[in-house]
Image (cartoon, rainbow, N blue to C red; front, top):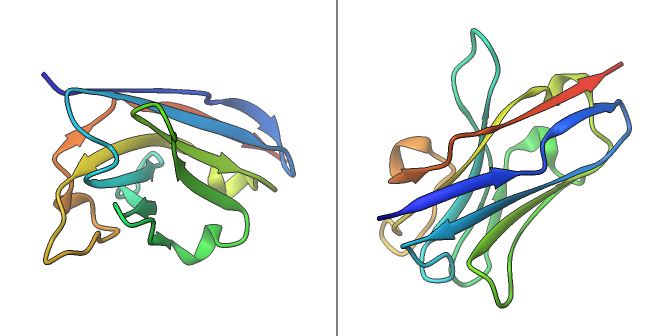
Length: 125
């Protein structure tokens, strides 16, 4: 059974930082695409970052230079380091795992198979 469990969300002031973790069981993080997505009330789910098995990373433009996605070296875990947070980053954040498409990982929720339950991030101005 595949399980993804996020942690690390919370409330911070603008300019602050949070580090999200996603513990994965039943599926390999290193051999597949790992992704972070977010969703705010009334909005569609948005891709934030994806990391491929070879380490290639794709970020949505709005988080480039502020967020960093990574994989645990010895643990089957995904991380999202979020710095210089802005109120518009407020959302429920989800981690996801999926297979490669033509050898690539796409920042597209439809291409991911397994999802966590989400962790709330709230940034106040």
